[in-house]
Image (cartoon, rainbow, N blue to C red; front, side, top):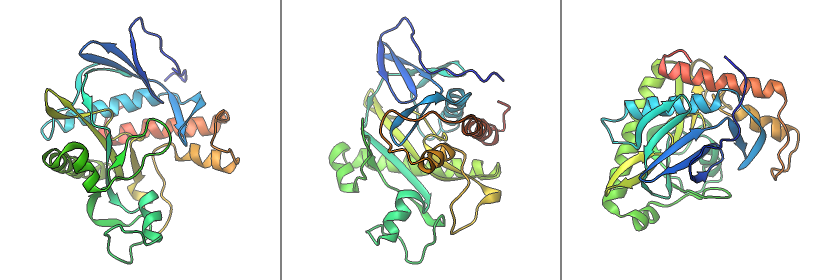
Length: 277
């Protein structure tokens, strides 16, 4: 496998949007989405790319979109190449639907501060929740996402639509969790996004990737401690260790952090799909 990285694209097409990782090109009623090897941390894009990251993300999303088609339709029309998909253009719902099966991250922090979470007392860090829960957030273009109460979601999109999306997200999480655990991976939490296509709700963006989910190794999982995860945690840890102020420009990552992160993305794809990268 080559270790070259793709940081920028310049196709002879109108640019629809440039995200932190993906470049979207406008084809009228369709979009061409190219997953680059860019990586961001603390909402800042880093100067390094991560070899194979874009391909791993795109191929993993395509796999999960296909696996969940019997639960809900999605925006994928064609997988053009390992890092590129052709999708339907939709009217996106500007909410991230986060499904959590374990208490970790911001949910754990909130729980410790005794803020209202509706969860039973006495849970430990990284413990499995009695049942998965949905914690929707705003989809911020810049800065951090903010958690939304269910009443806010109802106001934004309506009761029927909110209920439909909640049921779909929980069904997808249940299906994916079983498949992942059979391959030695715990899906601690994941975010999903939806949009309207001809008034029908469909899944969009990415699905069950290391960038949108927390994947833990089942054989290393232990309640009460920080978990080993298949994502960019080693990048965040390095940046915290060197005391970066989390404002641009971001520092360059050393080779060992780049290699370790690349390995995690490829391994997540192979373990979750059972396919060779």
